[in-house]
Image (cartoon, rainbow, N blue to C red; front, side):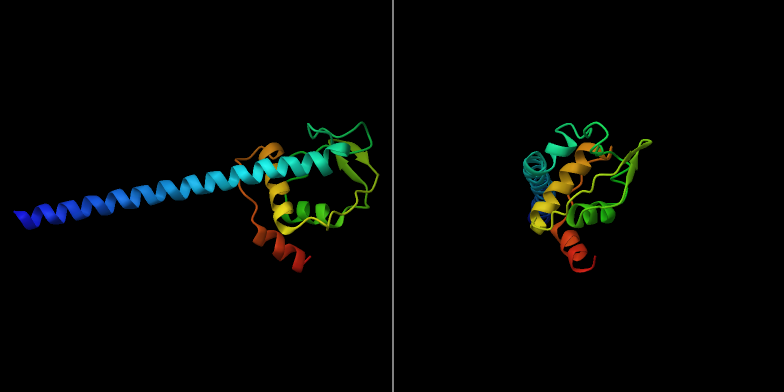
Length: 142
């Protein structure tokens, strides 16, 4: 009987520990996502909002809005942010012809934070963190 109690106790400790580590992992992911969103918003407001506006709706017929069409392809979005765009862009039937300068001065972390904020705010999808590894890979293989 004593052996059964010891085994049950050990199993309950193991189960409790595994549940708590899963909760800790989720909490850690949530904290990191929130950090990216907060920092990404700061970067957006400092470097992007002047043209695209704080609400992401763009400015008249000069600067396009940030919307789900623009954000369909993560790789293309990151490339435009890094390298800029000199080609006309049509969004919601409106053609925008002003070039967008590249922002290759952003660190991998800053670009990951910014893009995480963009996708969480304007893609219409659940917020997911864009990793620095994704940015680094794109930067190395444009």
